[in-house]
Image (tube, rainbow, N blue to C red; front, side, top):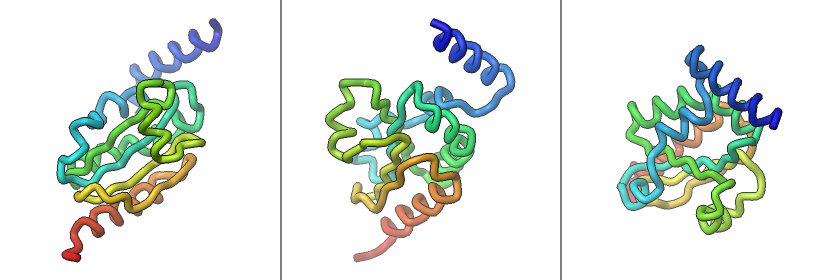
Length: 138
């Protein structure tokens, strides 16, 4: 009960201060069914609602998510590992630790993954690789 109250209080304070939160990333994300076959590069982020590393990463990654969507036309899909309905997706990518990120080029080819709170620069580098891979004429 105390944990729930703490999470609620944290969410309320974050909402008041405008600090990036995991919840705000989820709200801004592209639904999986929209991203599939969209012809756009995609970042799939696997997270858990109570995961402290996922919540910490959100502070650094929300601006990266915004720029990727706005400036680069990238889909950013958030997959909640607490949702049993999404188990086939996270099992397909062997998600054993979160946060876990999968990167796809515009053709839907997997071009890499990262695990853990790896930081904004690593995610930006992986997005650049996905964009470059999709731009090849091979």
